[in-house]
Length: 232
Image 1 (cartoon, one colour):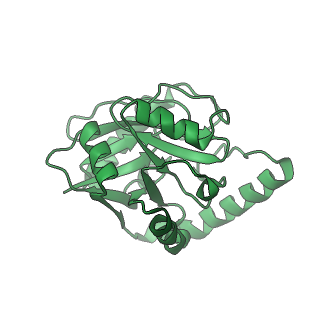
Image 2: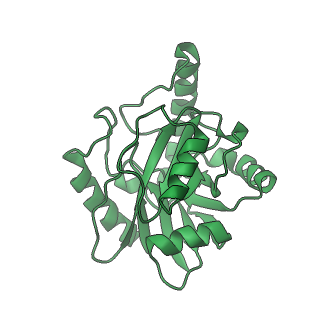
């Protein structure tokens, strides 16, 4: 059994577009160090609309991307995720098909934030318990039962200290991008949550940020960017 955070970011801030920046190598190295301290075996780097990974000597890195679809965010992890996607251009079904065409798994990210993915008929492989939105844990469980999908966990970390508060236990003989995809599709995964004092302090902050973003998006009829990266 391996412990893997399936949703993390190497960039501390949004606003630079879907391309690697100088923040990425620094973020990746810090993420790797914290992931090992948290006892994780693997880490998926899932930046917004671009794929960028940095191998770690003592940690398995899973390539990934968080695609901003027309109805919300889709996490794609596996051996060959797309290098980049145009925000807001793909439908959820198109994002899922793209993932499957490239041998990857497609995960419904934070389903009750920043979109309407639960209403989509796309053939997702799993539903995410998001480390920044644990107040919707019961809703995600109900959605997973309704869709007959496994649940996975991801911290949605944009800052290294956020890593590991939600992660995925993966039942596989060895940890590789391919084995992660197979385990997700076979349902040999389960989410795990690690509550820490810092998370209890930050949870109401995240809730306020998400509510503010939802109000802003409803007024503009478009997703609201968060330059701090706190909301994921």
